[in-house]
Image (cartoon, rainbow, N blue to C red; front, side, top):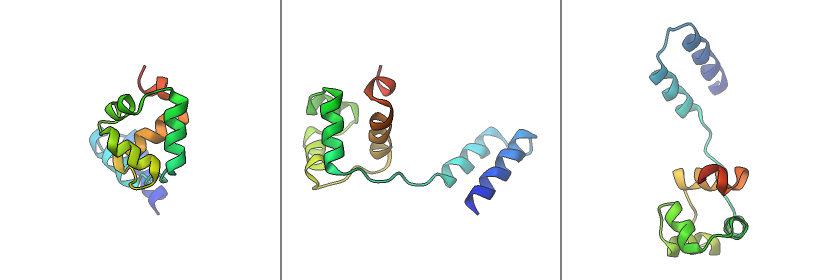
Length: 98
């Protein structure tokens, strides 16, 4: 059902029935939540990026303590932090922060 709504929304957007802003709302509403990352994945990501925990925490607008908690499994990133971590994992730190 969600894919149908999104597909029809794109068709309507293409012919000018709905605005760009409305189309962005449809796309955001139809996005599936990202899969959580395992603590080991977060640690490996930081080590592969060759960044200090303090620098990576600053990039993600969080504290070094919070980043360490994610790496140890005592907390999990959510929302924009999780999406950004997944982007860095999939594309590399250079593609997100040149």
